[in-house]
Amino acid sequence: MTSLRDEIFERMDELSPAEKKVARSLLANYPAAGLASAAALAKAAGTSTPTVLRLVSRLGIGGYPEFQTQLRHEVTEQLSSPVSRAASRLQDGDGATVFQRSVAQRMALVEQLGTTVPPSEFDAAVTLLATPCRQVVLSGGYFSRHVAHVLAMQLDQLVPGVVFAGEPLGPDIGTYLSLGKDCAVLVFDLRRYELPAKQVAALARQRGASVVVITDDGLSPAADEADVVLPVAVEGTPFDSFAALLVLVESLVEAVFQRLGSAALDRMKQWEESVHILRAFRAGPDADGAAAAGEPADEGEDA
Image 1 (cartoon, rainbow, N blue to C red):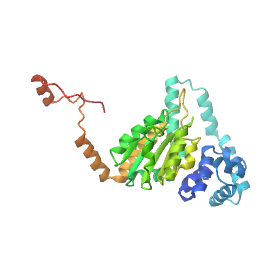
Image 2: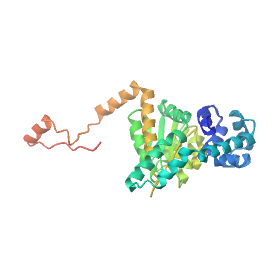
Image 3: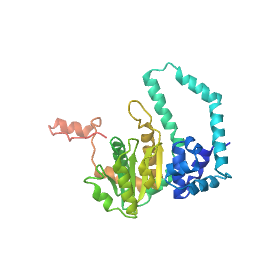
Image 4: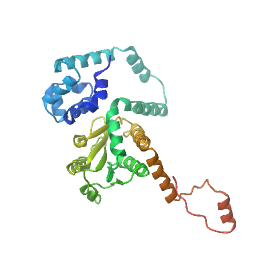
């Protein structure tokens, strides 16, 4: 039997913007959010109780009490599953080293991408990034800005108009003030959510730009301003793990590349023709000849 979580995932693209807010709130705290009252779920999602009831109806369920009954049934099944009990015992006493546990935990985070990122939301993000835009602006938080910068550099080799805003409420604010309907904004904001994320997402929406928010499964406040939300699990020790986040970013880049095809390949070729990068391990005959003649070697840089 398909779980309600899976049903919501599969039908995310059918939902209205308000219903998507309820769905995201439910998925971020599943199933606990759905076991609260309809009014409480609506408040958590920043919508109304009728919106919650419309979502339940769209799922083919007669009413909210029936919806909660199905949720409780799912919880009971999960708790009584022999596989779940065995997995819990294995994790409690497997005798693994710190390294083995760390690797296993991060692999589990990556595997959770299939349950935290609805396929329709991923496809919508790819469509926004692959559609010709006047500008695609990316920003991030204290740590996540570094991942945002990597994504910006890679996207820039596939599509034109990509800009990384390192200080969105500082020197880069002008980038957001010049946004329009033919622009897209991608904001990274993971827990310990930062005020600039919410503010630039709201500013981008006011300017008519499309907004994608990449956040953790607790959902950044910036998600309220987003057209597309991509939540990832980040639990790690001693800091949040970016394992799943990096896989999501690389998946976005590959999907954009596949969507654009030859256009992306042509832009990559132009990059290679325009940017001369020498690697230390590529010392060929020309380099030997230059060294023998006493000519200085060119300075290279890492990939």
